Length: 558
Image 1 (cartoon, rainbow, N blue to C red):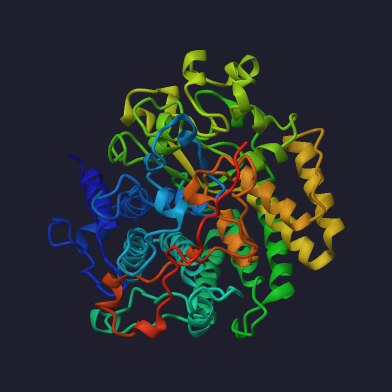
Image 2: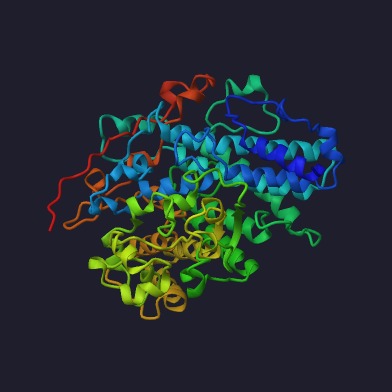
């Protein structure tokens, strides 16, 4: 076996090593035969270190205990299920709703300290932060190419941003069993910061960082990466290596989040409209640096490569190969690609709520990928699927065929699951700019941006009924990024509610929520496995348990 292959294997293992913030492991596992000196001596050391991070992000983090344990993409699906953006329609065929293995997110359950949801999020992210820290430290200790540290720090910034957006508890005006009161007690607290210098002793007493502390740290990582990746000598070695455009995109995400606060807890960092102004500025810089590409209709609707192969607008991509697919059910395709025969989709029929479907114009090409009510669109739909008419009619209405098995392979799970997954698309930058424009320049300017995007790229006859333009922007962003896990963070930041309890709803009974505020389980509790080790996170400094705080409603059916 070639040394580079051994090195890659060692760091795939390193990327998957469980290392919570309260449990700092050795830099290199005892089972590895590769020493730090050997790593430094290898001409491909840097590239293979980074492969370990990218592969680790796609790996099961908790031993594959649950079929939803397949790394970073599974967090995105949980987010969209919790935000009711993904609606699983198989129940309408008589299938048990719990065939949707993301039912905990959909139903708002299991978010307590000993529940699956906090454990899944924590174990998915912190081990990869540990891997990023290892790369940063190795680069410094052995004077490796500083661009490797820049890439690792970009990943680290992205991971911490997600953790901050997940675990910062945000106020809900309605006091459900003292939930609001308890949430006020932890206002402005995020997650513990673990750096390449954090010792095991320090990790056992590592408090939750304030919003100002964590975002200052994130911005420091991005500033370092920006300087390094702007150098003319920098060339990405793989699709998972970020570029300068990605750094600008990360800044845009950060400032968009900070714009949601006007409580003074950002400290010296911008908040409110000052942050939204920066979000718009960096989104435009990302678009300009990247070239502004937007996925075409063919890229979206292609039967064999649709959303499984890096497309023109994908700024940052994770790539599976057949040897990194964990199993037939521990993979994104099994849960999200209806044409994969071996997966759950024939039972769950993942798609959209009829409220989202009805909002889309018939001339929006993305609607062509959704099974219509009464299965009435077969004559047009058949050109976009590898299914037969009989298979099509065995799926539920509103099933969305956005994601395809790799190479159109429907039966071989290793081949079908070996897909590319977007971490950042240029379309997101357009929507960040739209929303930031709404806050800083007014509704009309933002609406003009939405109309321009939609008529140019998605629907030449774009029409809308809603007069709530911010809601309109977020809902169209939700359709655009369905299954990618982005929009829950927007809804949480903006304190947006959900409506799944309308007459004739296609949401199952357990998820018929109707609120005018964010759902409490968009903020999980920090898991007990962390608080038992990290004594700084006491019960009064943890998030309140949001499980089942809001109950679904009983609605009349047609």
